[in-house]
Amino acid sequence: MPMTRSRLLAWAAVGLALALIAVAVVVGVRWWRDAQRGDLERAVAMAPSDVDQLSWTDWSGVREELDVDLGDHPSGDDITELLDRGFEADLTQTTALGESAVTMQAAYGFSPATVDWELFSQSDKGAVVMVHLAESADIDAIKDSLAELGYAEPESDTGVWVGGVEVVARIGAITPELNHLVVDEERRLILSSDEQPYLEKAAADARDEAGPEVDDVIDATGEPLAAAIYTDDHACAKLAMSQADPIDQEQADALLADAGEVNPVTGFAIGLGGDGDIVVAMSFENDDQARTNARTRQALASGPAPGEGGDYAELFEASVTAEGKVVTMELEPVEGRYVFSALKDGPVLFATC
Image 1 (cartoon, rainbow, N blue to C red):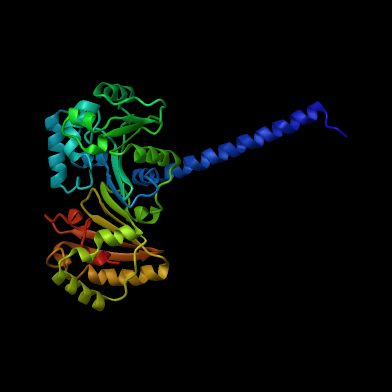
Image 2: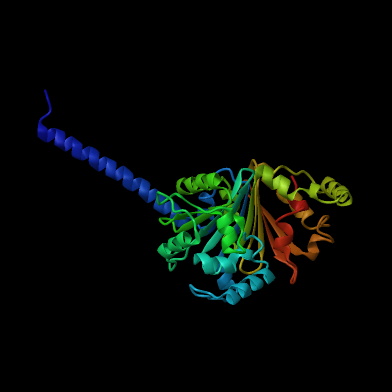
């Protein structure tokens, strides 16, 4: 028996209602997931999918930690003072924009002195800087500034503002990472890179949230003001004792033989908190490896520091725990020692693969 028009309309209404419910569920899940994430986790989710190394600076947190409020239009002297004080506090070792900050603020209308945070992503395919604009930032004014500076305006809202070497050279003392920019107004993001094709890919990855799978080590670091994050193989290369001189390498081999078994890390993060304490997080293939490596890394982090000089005890006091696949090292630095900057680039014995 053929359906009547009223029955067809009823089934159509049911279908529409189910579709709306499905959309609401998806939106609700996304909202809940986003609400549970901190700024660092949200930023990394928007990083390029092929990233090897991430450098994080929570600029709003840094300004708060230093008790500095520069407003929306800081002077060059105020910006310089912020960077100098941040350097002294070991809080600005991860920025790609420090030397460009004064010129950036005057030319573009934003800089480390006014943005919420910065994430610098690097891989063997390219690099991109991503900053999150404060709610008070005037995005239309920023776009006007880009046009006045000579950047070619994109045809779409998500396209690339094409600048290049000549445009950047006219602006002054700024990093080549500002050769090309994308203004993602919906997410209040500015993405920039020295290579236009890589920036296009990075902007698409940001919209898709196709970032690397390093949530486990990021969760362990909490909400740091500065952080360096490395993916598996890159962590081994970045922090390896092979960077040290032959004598230090020989000492490291002996220390490893005495300390116990080590396994390759699947992710590594080191974060500096507002209290000056440091958290190092290393992930492994399974829980057993994490427990084994917690004991080994505790022994290594309590002994000599080849490649750094002296003993680790002269740099910090360490507490090491394992939870699931992640080993967490809480480091309390000795006063006056720049532990974060010393450890984030290696060679670091306790981070060895």
